Image (cartoon, rainbow, N blue to C red; front, top):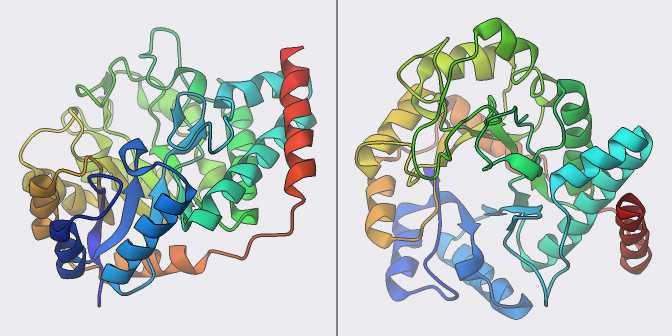
Amino acid sequence: MAARSFITGLSGLKLTTEERAFLRDTQPWGLILFKRNIADRDQIIELVRESLHELGRDAAVMVDQEGGRVQRLGPPHWPAYPPGAVYGRLYDRDPAAGLAAARLGARLIAADLLPLGINVDCLPLADMPVGGADAVIGDRAYGDTPEKVAAIAAEIAAGLRAGGVLPVLKHLPGHGRATADSHERLPVVHADRSTLEATDFAAFRPLKNLPLGMTAHVVFAAIDPVLPATTSATMIREVIRGFIGFDGLLMSDDVSMGALSGSMAERTCASLAAGCDVVLHCNGKLDEMRAVAAAASLLAGDARRRADAALAARTPASDLDLVAARREFDAMIANRIA
């Protein structure tokens, strides 16, 4: 069956009868898992297997597994990983060491995810926090210069892909200056366009060829003073597709977040009309999921091309001695702490 232009969450550790019917009937392009969906290895494998069975086709199965504050899989069943800022501090001491640690950490994350059936990780970030910004990005970021951020993000993307997992570039075209948490309310950035192009937007340009990207629910007043990037045709056309040059599958950030207004159907329609290829809905509330699905169109045209290209970009995981690799990574991080 043809997929529809949305990605859905699930409510818990097992599919409900209603969710089984929902997946069969609405055909989301992908799924996203959160801590409420995660208990142990066997449970995740079964949840993913049953979900794909109901869809009856290949699909993206996503998770936010960054490390630090944003890590859906963690101890005791999976290792803890450091926040992105750790790679930035290693880079400051020794650029080669920082890049190597970022790549190896991502390769190890992929080794955790792929055996579970999770084939997409919402990573890397190219956001650059500035003084006075909300802490929602904070130590998730790799640094405060476009060159450093892009270099580390590229290595993280390469590490994931070497492990058979697709990366998602976020949050286009930059969440670092936001003075509010978009989970709660809509941030407005007042920097002028030339500053944004030289800093925030510039960090994304070297990463424009990644297969998947996610928007920011942030207003950039110098370009579109009303609408956040997710629902702004101007921001998507002129900045994300234009100045940055990103041509991968563009998904919205979670449309259930507090930054957006209107019903779930209105948010979905606005995101797709602005130029998002697919809409992401995360909270697992079935009534909202149904509203998003009803408003989401079948994937077609450029959106279908990008969606197909993204899934086709997956490659088999390269060989890795996991024990030796984890020992090496732990030593890298311990060296940073020392």
